[in-house]
Length: 113
Length: 208
Image (tube, rainbow over all chains, first blue to last red; front, side, top):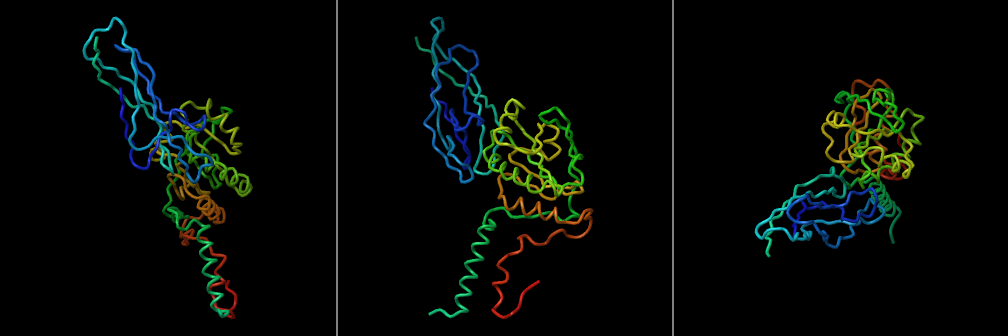
């Protein structure tokens, strides 16, 4: 299930594996629901070199998407299903950083038996 | 063949260009202190440092203070920290102090090892929502305020600026007489050029 994301121009978010332990990674988590959350596939990050920083940052910017995988429990019923979760991110541009945020995320799926 | 006057002019232009580049003249920031009579009182606050001791801004009365809102997850903030370490070391005996206010949500768990890793030599306290609001709602980091000896905000900066801008503003305040209440502290937006003498034709005499 694709989860499309779009960042304002000039801003980036850390990838799911940032270049420093103190940087806040992009992280998508799901609440308990009809489906069992599986792997979240993150895109390949870009290495963003900022003049003022000694090493490049592993980041996402512009338009990109995550792929959310779910497992269907045997007892689930065919039909529409919704899953909700949170996207944790922390955005910066080359001069400043904004506070970490949690964004509510929801996806609609069809369970087919 | 170039005559002596032409060579002199070329060297002067090259020197000025090099100086202006070193001053970050063409970047978005340059030193700009508010006139003394326009400065507002910096709001006082009481926050705890890593030892649990309460630190108040009013404890620094009489000193020039660089009040820096930052966080361990802020890359541009990390760029500035070595500068602040240097300023603290160079100017602490001239009644100057850096005070770092960390916005890290998990508090000392992250901040304490980070301070040790960076070898930060200045006071660091943890922010609360109140101090953020007192300073206009600190939404972006780094956000810094330069506070004069009378406890007034002389300048404020949102985002990464140049080391030279900080240094120039700090030195201007350190060099200002105490209890400067009236008049202008500094009209000059650029520090005095060491190349000024090159602008005069040979034989014109030295400036003051």
